[in-house]
Length: 185
Ligand SMILES: Cc1cc2nc3c(=O)[nH]c(=O)nc-3n(C[C@H](O)[C@H](O)[C@H](O)COP(=O)(O)O)c2cc1C
Image (cartoon, rainbow, N blue to C red):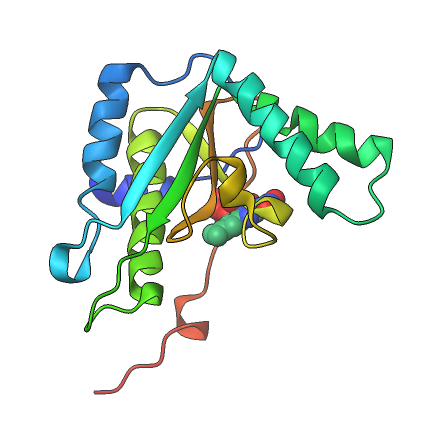
C-alpha cells in the first residue's frame, strides 16, 4: 500500500477475528516497531505476543489483577476482565524497559515505546490487519507488571489487540488541519 495512504487510512477496529498475522508477517511488524525513534539507542521497547493458549494465561492474569485491584468488583465486571483477551486472536503487550540514563529520562523511553506501538499498528494496517490499543485499568493502575513476572523497571504501556477487522468499519473523521496547526513563518 502507498505509504501516505497507509497513514491516512489506519483505523482502530474493535471487532477483530482470524486470520491473525503469521510469524513471518510479525517479523516484519517487529522490525517496524524496532525502527521507532530512540534517544541514545537504548532499545527500551519489548513485546509479549499472546495468542492461542496464551490468551487463557492472560485471562487468568487479568482476572487475578481485577480481584486484587479493582474496587466494588461485581461478578459482571469480573467477567469482563476475564473475557477481555478473547476479543482478538492476538494481543501484543507493550513493555517499556526503563533504564537510568543521564540524558534520556523515563518519559522519553516511554514515548519511544509509544512510537513503536504506532509503527506496529501501521505495519499491521499495511498488511490488511488491524489493531486496537487498550489500557483501561490494566495499565498504569496498581502493579499489573508483577502479575506478568516483570521487574520494577519494566512498565506496561498497554495492549494492542490484533486481528483481521470484521463488520462495518468506523468512518474516519475529516480533520481540519488549520484547527490544530499554527504556522510561524
Ligand atoms: C495510549 C492509548 C490508550 C488507549 N486505551 C484505550 C482503552 O483502554 N479503551 C478504548 O476503548 N480505547 C483506547 N484507546 C483508543 C483506541 O485505541 C483508538 O485510538 C480509538 O478508538 C480511536 O480510533 P482511531 O485510532 O481509529 O482513531 C487508547 C489509545 C491510546 C493511544
